Image 1 (cartoon, rainbow, N blue to C red):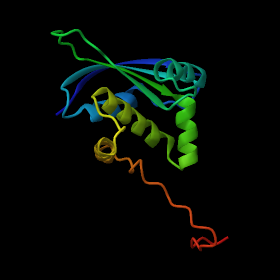
Image 2: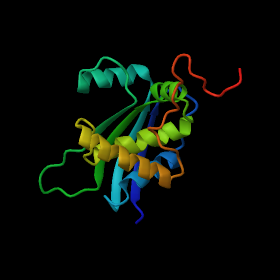
Image 3: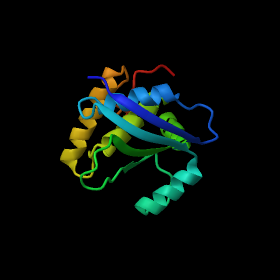
Image 4: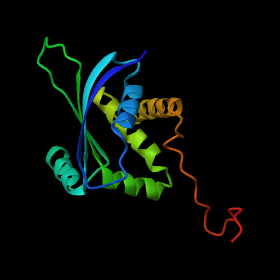
Length: 166
């Protein structure tokens, strides 16, 4: 099932290594498959200052986070394809990708899918819900050709041989 997605992209970041509108739309549509045939979504890419301010205002957390999801709250009886807004902090995405040894594109894809799943009502507060959400993310990203976002190479324990020649 293909998704008819209208994506409104707002770039409020000075970063120059951002995904294209087409990539963001592809990732969002992949997350929407099976949930919606039609959707309208805004994606705002911000720098750390705006990300921190929004996270402080809406979540009482005084730091920039990777993605914030703002689901639309329509009045009862109003039927529209409007899904909501995602705010993605470019600097946090770049830092996390580097720290976790992930390709930046794969991390952008993951966080876009993650944010859209939040807009659809998924969360990861409870362990069981987190497992469901992570499983969905893994399946969606695999269909898109990206690796498991939760797999990180393990560091060898102190004194353990990791097999690398130094």
